[in-house]
Image 1 (cartoon, protein in one colour):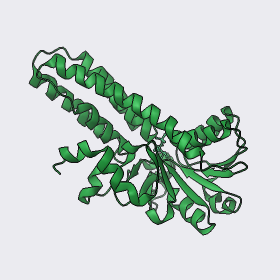
Image 2 (cartoon, helix red, strand yellow):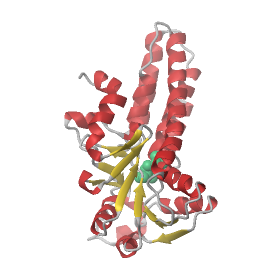
Image 3 (cartoon, helix red, strand yellow):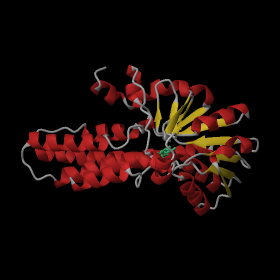
Image 4 (cartoon, protein in one colour):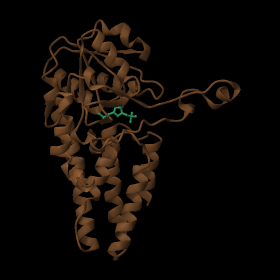
Length: 309
Ligand code: RI2
């Protein structure tokens, strides 16, 4: 269980974060776990693997990439422990490879929507969104980026580091300055933790505010999302759970305890309705949010079968 509990802890504490990275880490941990199990009994093996999968699934509730990755790896076949183990190992490797390739492909597809001279606003830290900006910049497009801090966890600091390292001129702003700066912006690009069947986007808290400000200023909003960020369960009317994290991330315990009449809330994500999204850039193409159902059916169809459709 070593690889599972270590990875689960890292995901929970956000040492490993970002919807894609969480998914890849979970797939790799399942592979390590499968390789470490000593039993010859298939039912014991399956039980242990299922226990491990459940531990990983409970770490963070919102990013659908996590359950999608876990189910992809656990969809193993075989009549013996060795066959099932080999199946898990190859599925995990395939997931990681596909997911890395997807980020690269999204960069290429999304970069076509970036024009020379564009000022781009982004929020939080998304590998897929940065892939678009970095690809456009590498193509010689003279872009500038405005990045938000993304309180309370300040993932914006990771973003400015990555953009800086890529040589992209970047401005850091506080989250509440989004609307103020939107007047200078040509394009907004964000990542995704989940996309519902109606094309709604679940992403870092504050994304819906960015979308509103972009809409008001007639700035296009581009979402960078691998196909495994789409949520098959939303087809059955399930809502995507919004993770509420510890208030300690917002205000220290001592101060909070001294403020008897104050409650601190810390939702980590919000929902942006499809009307505010111009394009979702996936590895299989740039689609309008209305096409979310097609992505789920064509690329996550195996999950629908398992869910009994
Ligand atoms: P990539 C992050 O969540 C952000 O909300 C980001 O937009 C999203 O995951 C997707 O990131 P968190 O883990 O997969 O920081 O594109 O809460 O890297």
